[in-house]
Length: 305
Ligand code: PSU
Ligand code: MN
Image (cartoon, rainbow, N blue to C red; front, side, top):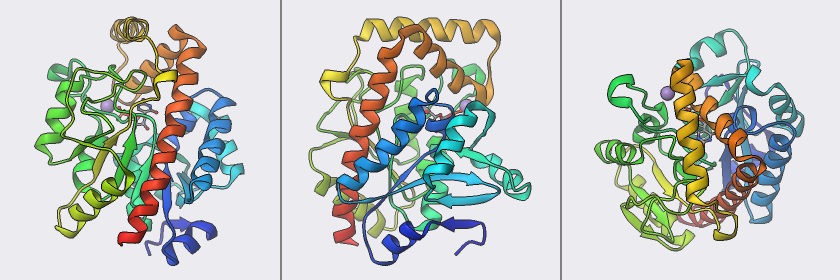
């Protein structure tokens, strides 16, 4: 085991006995939602995973340790610190670990730590991707590169249209990452079920998700798989409301010259501010929905492995 990795006793026991485990990211807690809803949601997501037969492993960097399985106290700490915690992507790991610092893990670093621990399924809200205007800014999330090289299935609700969804799909195709729609042929756009873009394959059951991931691994193909699970209809938002807010947020980011790693958190916070509590409520529901699917899929995968 890597000397920087620290697996909680419950997660270690589950992994050793072949029980299903689901990884969860911590940037969604620190940067993705306001306190205290972020902490409440993180704990509820863990409970949902337990209710569906799997063990949750919330992932973060605490005191330079790569944690697979956070305590409720650690979750509370990350949630309270909010944006003061370093948003940690792949490039941030060496310095944070050397300094024994804290970091909230993005999709990228959550995949890295999950893979180190031997966790294969990861549930989150949305992933990073190719930003609008990337032709000139070159702002492409490290999440896409990670999906290309690290063997973890990421279950999300698609990507927000703060990104260029068409270019994001092109990038994933180039990198050989299968993009699956759960019960849909269309890529969901986080708050809404529709984007107008097609996924590679529609899969309708957790059994088949597990079988596809298992096949990818037994073929010796590196990298992960992206499962996009649409937000339940009753919680989805009107497309015009959300798209107007996103356009306004992007205009403001451009005006203020927001760039780099601040870009995604700025846009997420702005969209939330412009759409009030509705987008937060939708966000919470789609994460719970992904947690359920991830737990069931991890259960199926545990039977195949
Ligand atoms: N998109 C969301 N919610 C999030 C994020 C993205 O809808 O919380 C977070 C995730 O942690 C993701 C990260 O991995 O932002 C991507 O940041 P960047 O675009 O800087 O790579
Ligand atoms: Mn970026």
